[in-house]
Length: 80
Image 1: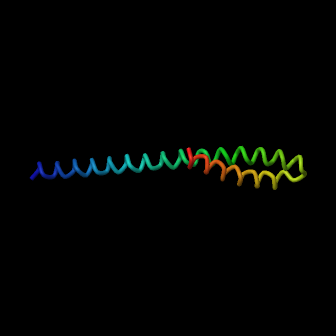
Image 2 (image 1 turned 180 degrees about the horizontal axis):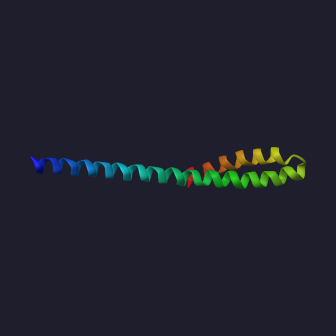
């Protein structure tokens, strides 16, 4: 009886460990794909604010630049 309980606990531990590895790799993949989007949004916001400041409205330029940069970063990550 004791041998059977030990074996069942071992398979449960292996299943939990395998599940943890799968979840960990999934989170890593999500972080890696979001990285380009966030960098693109940051670069776009900075350049959009600079262009907007020259044109007279830095807030609007930053918002438009962040949107375009995030879209560009997501497209870059998807194709890379």
